Amino acid sequence: MRSFIGIVVLVVVLAVCGSVYLRGGNKINQDQVRALYQRTDLAIAASDDKPLCEMLSEDYVQTTVTKTETAQAEESHDRAQSCAALAQSMQQLRQLREMFGGRMPLRYEQTVGDISIASDGRSAEVEVSAIVEMAGMRMVSRGRDTVERRRWRTYLTSSRAVTHVGRM
Image 1 (cartoon, rainbow, N blue to C red):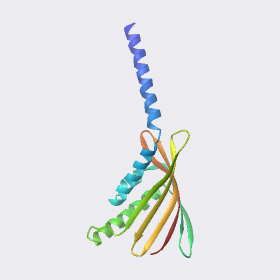
Image 2 (cartoon, rainbow, N blue to C red):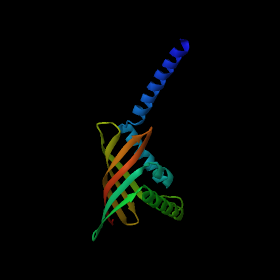
Image 3 (cartoon, helix red, strand yellow):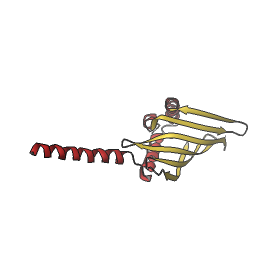
Image 4 (cartoon, rainbow, N blue to C red):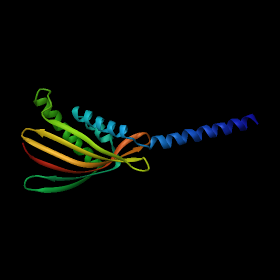
């Protein structure tokens, strides 16, 4: 009889632990979203593409409309393409930093705006804007990202943005 009670207690404990893992590990809040963007800022400041790529979900899709004074282009990239572009961009930033004696030759500022948590608590829509200024050029981007919580990790699952590129 004791072993039967022990098995029942073990099953109940495992069920509670499983429930906490599944519910808690897949729920997102505003602090987790803001922490993701803070990690983004740190990785960009360090010109490190690895953590940036790790923040993207396997099914990540990025759509960007880039506008200049004379043209407009729309591009979509999956995770692999986005990671490759991040690696190339961060390599270029590292080279520029070396050329400028260790100083970052650009100004980057990202602002997280409205964060709307979905009714199921598993994802959030995030309004994001960013400004990049470098060597007489200015890029201003405004977009909406979808952020999800999966197995205790926070990921970007999609990003849609419009970027204006011009001279300063």
